[in-house]
Image 1: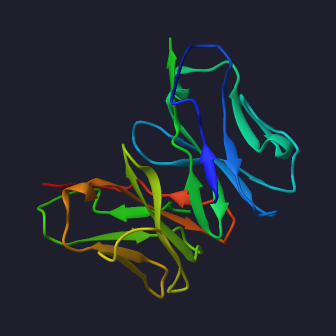
Image 2 (image 1 turned 60 degrees about the vertical axis):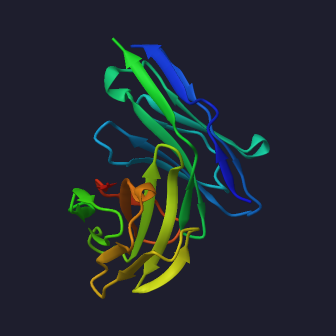
Length: 112
Length: 112
């Protein structure tokens, strides 16, 4: 069965700290897609990144970076020099035939 | 391009009633998916439509149904509402299967 696990339910950091959000997935497919979404208090899910199973290159976008490792079935997300505006719930998701299977989410609180 | 829009944003219904939620995808997107988000169950896939055909269905009772129109707009209907149907219902659109899904702001349904 396909499954996404985000073991960290809540993380609290002080502004400017680096923080890593963990994501572990299970799938039997050889071709699959992984995603990260951000859900701020307003409720709308915001797309952050998509990674396909054949591309293990790490991605960096500003203060955000993602580490994809097929060997450990992990797709971790790091925020460098966190800011208060990063406070949100972050979801990791796996695409299964057009539907997204989400992890339970990690609530990140960045305090000033 | 305009994003995904959902109407109404908030709804209060009574047990036993039925409700219809509407979603307009991003222009050019032919795939529309629906998700239910609750504190207890997290984000769960309801169904996906592509070119007016239901391609995927999640594990929800038959009271939950949907459809897609020729202009890609989609509706979902919940009949005989139960208290447990109180949730945030999110609609997402995508260009192709496996591509990122863009979410609307959601409809918050409260069943009393």
